[in-house]
Image (cartoon, rainbow, N blue to C red; front, side):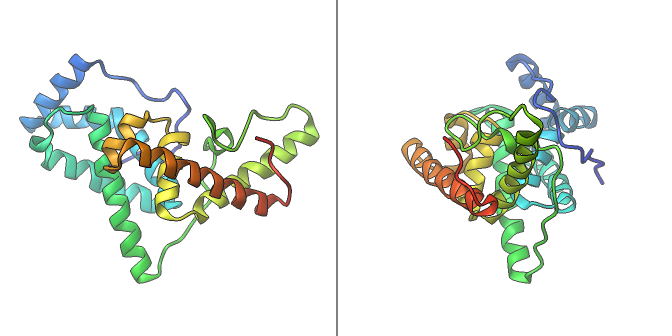
Length: 214
């Protein structure tokens, strides 16, 4: 069983692979090189865990699904044709596993949420609902309340809206990557993301009891 670190990464956590390094890694993975698989997990585990934790709202479920994601990729690496970045393809696998897990948990009525500390929900940006952090102590307290409200509001969104907010505003993926991951046209991604942000803003305002400046 894979051992994944369940700490949530800082903004610059990941060591980016160059296209040449990624191509060599893929070739080694296709040869079933276990050392390459270990490197692959080391480079991408936090990114996958971060996505799954935000989508599922539960650390342990995220860790279990992440293990399944990496094993699935290792078994099916021959199907990777290089039409996108390896990380984009990995994200697509992770999103599909996450959807299946949500459906499974919903059928069993066993979905649980816990508080995911140290996430960047307070920095939803690029058209999102949250601006910079307040500076004064009284405003800092208000900012902490707001970040908690964002986490709660994010968990309350429907699956599609939450997925788009996570991919674009929290994970910072480009629209082209989101199109590849979701299979949705570019215009559909942008229009649904706009509605997702509006839904998130409404849910946050209900949680804190005051209007958010945008």
